[in-house]
Length: 325
Image: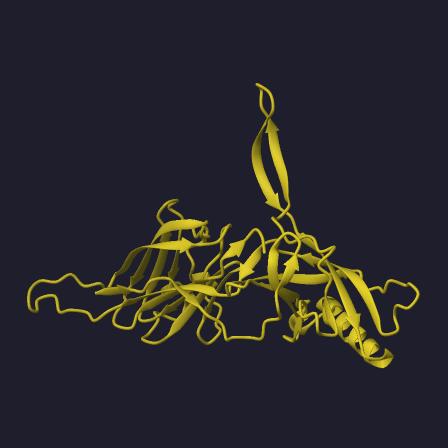
């Protein structure tokens, strides 16, 4: 019989979190900047050599939208489309040192940690930094940031010797905050039964079944899928809209998934890869395929695996997205 596990919040490994401070727009929180190399820079530890100046922080609230509307013949207008815009965060930082050389080293290092987001990395892409906001209740939200400007000293008397401050502007491609913990759903085929033993039985070799997925975030998410064989054809349907997509392994030229073999489907950007890295996107039922998203709240969906058997499984993963930190 098919088996389904409840949605699971996947915890990350514990990391050191700086003390919380009161931050405009969001209240008490612990802030950390993570540079493109993965180094963590605590931003709310007032005993450290650098920390956020809470006064002047902005851009942590709800996203900004551009509204497209149509005039209404009876007056006013009607909303046609709302387009979320890139986010800009203003981030004042104080940097200090026990002497001039220590201050200079700290100033250069932290400046490099932010500006390195504009350097071209492997694959020709500019890797972003991450601004992380941790609440006292243990929840953590993150947003990808790029340095825009502002790493300049105050230029006043006595600054630039053992201390100085900068007011950074950080630019965010995606204006939404992302949960640091993934939501995962696992569904698999259980032990199959002989049709005639001990009495006529319907096998689950075709359909893993229907379930309801819940997105606890504020905005839609684009999930990723991992399918484990055996399976010959895979169909995922969002029942509330009828949107669906099918991956036919026969059309990929490599045949059905065997026991233990996997294929990964990304919905944003559209991508299909085998467990060995082969591009299998040709197996999707274009142009009908619609790699659907999950809106906030509950969504009824159906997972169907033709040619499934013991070990066949579907794993869905997404990170909830939020309007605010």
